[in-house]
Every structure is written in C-alpha cells, then in structure tokens.
Length: 231
Image (cartoon, rainbow, N blue to C red; front, side, top):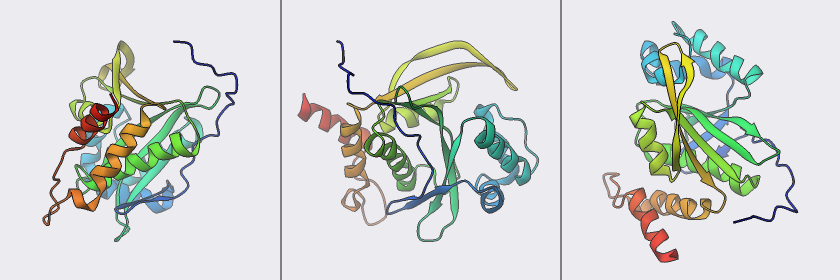
C-alpha cells in the first residue's frame, strides 16, 4: 500500500515540558533537582541492577547517575522526562524521548526506569499514555518506537502491554559493558494509536479499579475488545 504523503511536513521536536494526569506529573529532567531523588527511587546502588540493560557505565553515586543523564541530554539526543507522584511530588521514575527524527516523524521512548512504588501501578501506564499523546496528538508523529535488550523480559512485557507491535530482533546489534546486545524492536504507528489511546483511557478510568485499587479488567483485554469492535 502506498501512502500519499504529498502534504507531509517535518514535525516539531518533542519536549519534556510539563504534562499531568490524575496520578503522575511529568517534568523536565533537572540534574540539581532530580539526581538524588532518582537515585533514591531506584534504590541507591541497586540502580545499577535496574538500569543494567541500558548498558550505561557502572554508577557509584547519585552524582554519577545525574552526570550520565545530563551528558545524554546535552550530547546524545535524549529529552528526559521525570515522573513524579502528583499528590506527594515524590520522584518515581523516568523515560526519554530519543532517536528523534523530525523529518520522518519518528521517535523512540527509551531509557525507561520505574522505581518500586511506580512499577505495575496506574502511574506507570498514565506516564506512558501522556508521553505517547504528546508525540501523536500534539505533534503528529507517524511512528513511535520502543527498543530493548532482547534479554530484558520485563521490557518486552511492558511494550506489548502498552500496545506496541513486535517487529523483530537486530542480532549482535551493539557491544555493551555487559557484552553483546541483541536489540528487539517494537513500534506503534499513528493509525494504531487511537485504539491504544482509547484502551489506556478506559483502563485508567477510576471505574476500572475496585475499592482496594485492584484492576477489574486488564489493559490487554480492553484493547482486544476495541480491536474486535473495529474489525
């Protein structure tokens, strides 16, 4: 199928200006404000375990973490978003827009790290909903990517849960401090975003949670129903 892109124009670059939902607020990474709080959210020295699949140099302190993120934002094309709990303003995690290609309307969400309080919580889903909404709804990108070390089972699960489509593995793609990296590629296209967006909104609806905060329906089930209705 040939897509008519006669009227296509390059997109604006995604920014990390503030975004907010019911559970999470997203703010731009600020080294002085966030390096210590991210280090704490990631468990101090266990940050190295949480970020193992990034292939970043080993870190011995919050200052090392802050320096690494700052360098990637200054020179590596990262636009890092910090996730904070809306009510308490506690820092919970981060992710970055990266490999940004304004000409073709493509960018990646990567360097995704959720601290323990954020993992498997509505805040995690809402944060990625907000980041995707900026890329697709605000800026009109055509393709949003999620790439990971193929050995990272948790990241595979997250990509599939959020509605990204597996595209394949680049074997022996990179040399990292831990050795070889085979890179798995996932993507979401602009035409796929409306169903993914609708599913996330339905899942995040307070009516989808019981009095103890447990989900009534899984995100994947909701999205499957939407696809079936659209078929």
